[in-house]
Image (tube, rainbow, N blue to C red):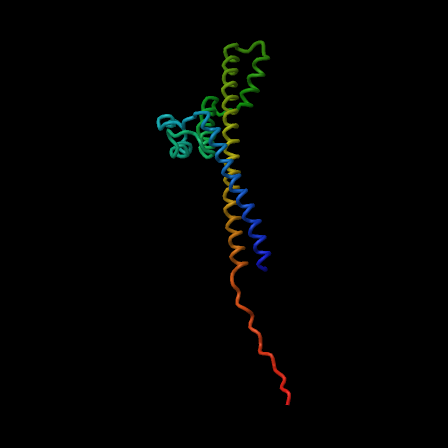
Length: 184
């Protein structure tokens, strides 16, 4: 690769890398700013005592901190909200509870108190699913930002390598001595 080609290739890689790194930083900043606006605080130790051990272990590094990053959003959604939803519904999903509510509400013989209880549970699960969806979307954008950021760093490093290799001094090729003709 000649020096001109190396220069052009390395400049292109630098520009692409910088764009990726800026995009990654933007995604992290934007997600963080949006999450901070919600003022969600991760639970305290006593707030997770009744959760399964795997969820407690996932939440422990973040106890009592502000929910302000994608990874925290994922852990909160999957290990706190989800566990509470499943506990309140005895393991039934929103779809299952909603189906039971719809069926019971159309049954004239159904116990009105039971229908009301199912309706409240349905509403609680709907709100839980909505919040989980929002938080997991924030996590997905954070993850895409992380990928862009690290890819940007890798592309910048590749640009530097291309530049170094392209501009490395190469020894001049050895040429065999040219025979000289003598005029006698």
